[in-house]
Amino acid sequence: MKTTIKLFIITAIVSLITSCAKNPEKLLVKKDGIWNATAVTTIPGFGTYTDANEITFTDGGGTSKDISTGDVSTFTWVYDKKNEVITITTVDGADTYVIVNKVSEVEKDSEKWTFVNGTENGVIFTTSDFTQVTTLTRK
Image (tube, rainbow, N blue to C red; front, side, top):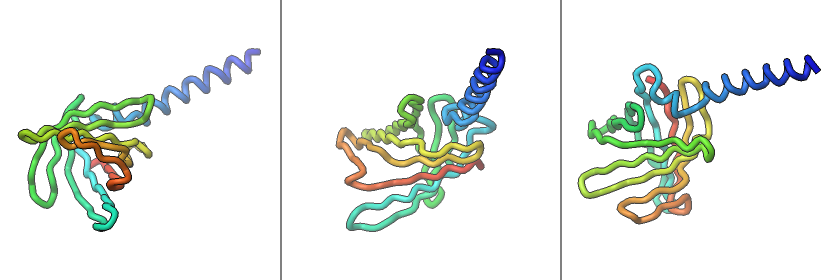
């Protein structure tokens, strides 16, 4: 019985440490919160495009700087631990963009996100419209 209790306690501690270490919500803002993000987007019939950004995450918000143009945008974000998705909302003038990504890989200094769906001014986009995989690496 003591062995079973010890195993349970050890398993619980390891699970807690692992879940905390792999929680995107906590990792994104650690250190200075600055990440390099490379998004590879494939649009059926049009090809594949790569976009690079420097993203700074703060609690519930952040900024994204397009590496090629220098354009900066602000956003809010929320992580849904149950469904393992991150939702990013950007308002640019009169335009509102909401993107939902599945967090498919989480490491201490990297993450991989896969596009699930999104909206642009209320128009819904899904993976039948395009696919996108974003790789983030801590800067």
